[in-house]
Length: 142
Image 1 (cartoon, rainbow, N blue to C red):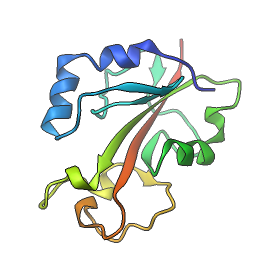
Image 2: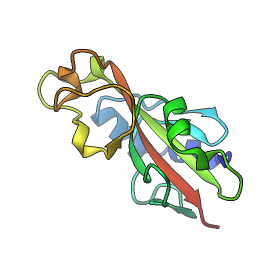
Image 3: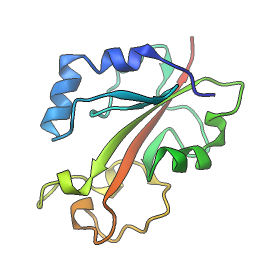
Image 4: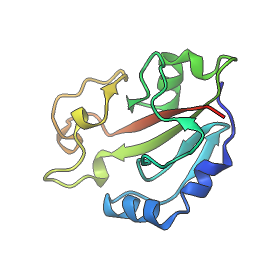
């Protein structure tokens, strides 16, 4: 099940994470969307959230791309089932925020589990898709 984890918001105040968000053109804003689900402007790091497994075994893997929180919860029911404790981070990827050359590419961020149909390598070039989210699932170990 999803659990409230204040360390996600505290880690987001770290100047390194703020710098990473700014360099990638993303907002440093962070917020809890619901207990255990956090929207962040960075993509985490290998030192993000100690006492959590960074690559837990789930039905969708530990990271990837989704259309929305609802899309992720539908594809990964264990996030709401009792017995295991999870935290999820979502980083919005908005077509409007991406540069005309380069930028965010589909194949770099894990499996896409959404309902839209990517047509291009870069989200900036997509004719219909306006936004997706990179997700990362963490499972509490201690």
